[in-house]
Image 1 (spheres, rainbow, N blue to C red):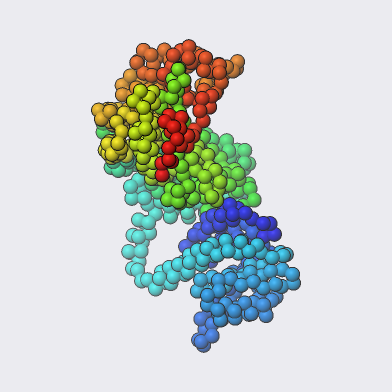
Image 2: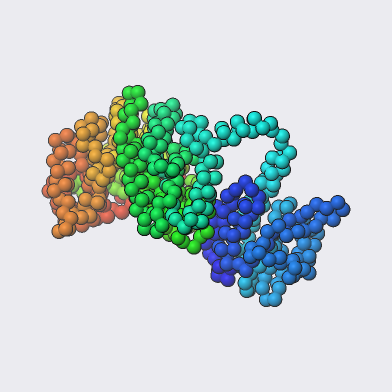
Length: 614
């Protein structure tokens, strides 16, 4: 890799990969060994050597070899060069890295905090200049953690603790106080031991990473006390179904891990046993959990990593945990309430997720996001409304599709910040547009998409009412779109929130109908005036193998009986238009009529040219 030219995204990905290798242990040598091992593999280096200053009795500090991979001492081979670099480092306190050419190869030396010097030896040629700069923050973070470990070691050495107090501490440190399951610290030790046994006795084991789907919604809507009780009951169920000799741990929040030992001599046997156990976990958690007046349904997303690792990467506890965690996110992406096995391609996806999330945080403040609006037309082809959509053009990553970054925002609190930004911009545009509409205009609303995370916030109703009232437009000029996912948790509370908003003339559109939670039993209770049929039904509308016309007809008949208007998404062909005009639907939305457009274009369609809203 050191002889390849890396672009900006590749350098950022490399930085993230190396940063993930830092902090694997509180033991300084183990931590340094893990980091150096990962760096050699990622950069394809000949060797890396860490030299640490040893404080002798005299004033002059001595540089001694602390760790080398491969196991050789570069100082013995290239004494003059190493001493020259050391002298330059000590004379120029501001220098962060120095290079020297040795036998047509480049030796790259970094200041390793105040602890010493880290030497990189290339196989041949020179290091890319941008790579040298990209490594600086990584080396700095590694040195900081190394010095922190050394400091912690000194503090532990100096600390005097009585034997009884120490024993009590050890017992408490191994257990999670809420669930009484073994905790993260005990898990690390147990996993390392199980991996060693598997390697020694030549059998396979597995690690299952179990994350509870939408658990945050329980805490947000019902309170942390209910959430804590739910966690204890989940822990009891997981414990009850474990095999003899296996252990379940709680490592934090709603995350549990399950170590499966000796599950087969071959990888195929290990996979089969893991599938059996994972299905049993899913079945165990499928039963409702009764807590007082609440009947809660919880589902797991499970990531599974088989060990010893069948891939190139060295098998250790940190890698196995990371692999299982990565596979768990794949299970969530596949729809939750399922399991997924780790494969190497997932590493790339995980790294890209981190990069996108990091840049999205900056994008909100750096004016990289912008709004577009897709018009909705009636059967007379008059524009009656528009849906607000967000787009992101990153100067570093390029155009990021909404279905990619919205999903990442949903899994973090970024969605709340993003939603606030969207409402502010939409409100500004709505005010300017409303002032210019003709009195007899058919255009009657702009809709804003509401995320499930946003909807479950305790102050959601007050926030929306305050926002709409602050806009200089009638309340019903701004409508809220939500998907069926909002109905997954506490339907009665969902209806209560919607009714309060409806009392303030704030209306709803049920989006992507038919693709998510089966909401037919609640549809007549919801205060919605418009339902949007998902475009997936329309895309396959004229397919002989997948004719969805019967489903669409059934939805149209049902909504007519319930006095709910229908908008059809994904209208792209004249055949679609002719069919839905005949059915006299309320509205049509799709590329046949209009693609999503900037505010200026929508305004020109409705009112004529105006200045762009800032």
